[in-house]
Length: 127
Image (cartoon, rainbow, N blue to C red; front, side):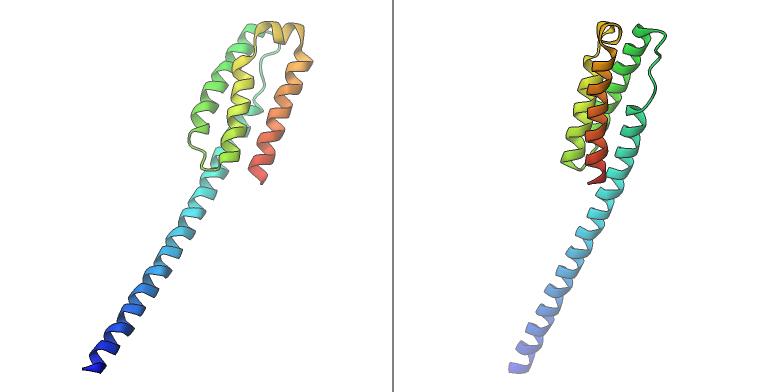
């Protein structure tokens, strides 16, 4: 009678150990998928962040910035990494808030703010 109990206990330990290994494998696969998603999100966000605005038409440049902000906001929602999400959201806010007056009256100041947001995004994506 003791042999079947011992064999059952050994089988139970084997099953539980197997479940632990399967769970670790699933967590590793999930982490790899999150990393791949983060790389894709970062590549897209940086592409949009560095797109040139039309300097000959301030209104068109503002329209382009606002369109990029909307796209970045949607992209931020897909970011698995909180730091990347926050960096994309910050950049989107900078682009969303730009006005024609900013581009005509203080273009250097606005570009400095945008450059700071792009640097934060680059740092978040690298880290």
